Image 1 (spheres, helix red, strand yellow):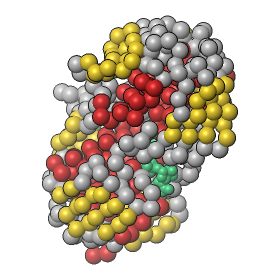
Image 2 (tube, helix red, strand yellow; image 1 turned 180 degrees about the vertical axis):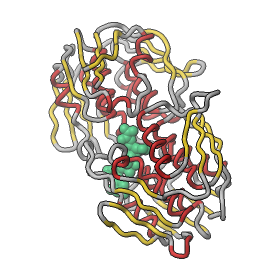
Image 3 (tube, rainbow, N blue to C red; image 1 turned 45 degrees about the vertical axis):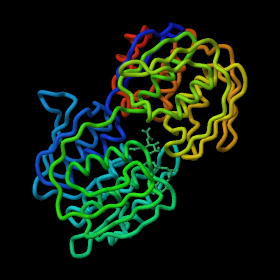
Length: 422
Ligand code: EPU
């Protein structure tokens, strides 16, 4: 098992490139299941989660491989018949596997997908995915830990459905299913995340008829069949955001190349509020961390609010602020596990339910820490960069699920960071 070793306190200077978005690539690769044939998805990050989805497609009888000519592209071959099943062994390592449910039941009229089970950051039920599919006529049973879904007479039918709460992968699942359903579907209270909009764009390129992408109401006219997909995934706003926070740490000056500024507005607003300079430059955003951050209050919310996936990273910056900040996590109920690890580096944070009160300290000091989930791991790497001395982040497999060789991206900025055997 690997660990990341960071010698902190070195100023970061230079530019860093953003990879394709994990959370767009996963549902878009899964969307290939909606059509027989040869698909290509471009700008796909090389991440553990993407490889897991490749194995899942392989289990179903498809192939998913990196193209020899373009290592950022994944070619997917979907045969005429597949085994419409997602086994527990794969779903338990990646909850997002559940996004195959909608495409499978829409295309093959049946699906057997393991329930994901527990998760470190919260309960994360999939009731809204199932309610939405049921509204489209799917018959759903829970048996032996699996969701068994089937479409009576082989095809789903359009319906009007309102999500009880906004869910990213839930919206994606039901939108994909509706694309092949008979008749018109209206989905209300949909998630508006850029990844949902990118999936809608990919589906439209496959021949789907979807209006309202990026808004909370999707109107979908079902079609009989779709054609294979050729789509380039949007840049990863959370990876970009993580590098922006790195640049906003005191003494740093970083250009983040390739992020989409409109996807990063809520974060950039907070970075400016803490006193970092953020300015557009050709091809990216430049961020300069000028002096000690000012405290700010932050509340996570679905897009376009402040993303829960950036909460842990922003907390690192606030740990060094000149005063007290309040962070309220409203999306997941248990997403403060990084707090105890940050305390090991000298941070002063008190958690009370959904709220963390972060009292800034003048400096952090390096220590061995343990990653608990993907974004928490990224936060610990950022904290290590800011801390004096050595920080060792254990359990790097969490980080590798969502960041492409983070140490190779940060080292050219001057960071003293390396991967080692734990
Ligand atoms: N929820 C329900 N019922 C459902 C679905 C969701 O109650 O049927 C609740 C969840 O428990 C949570 C809230 O709704 O409290 C929002 O969850 P959502 O369904 O939007 O999350 P997700 O689709 O499982 C995606 C990302 C997460 C990201 C969240 C929120 C992917 C593959 N994952 O998860 O990304 O945190 O949206 O933006 O798109 C990450 O990349 O580190 C990550 C965790």
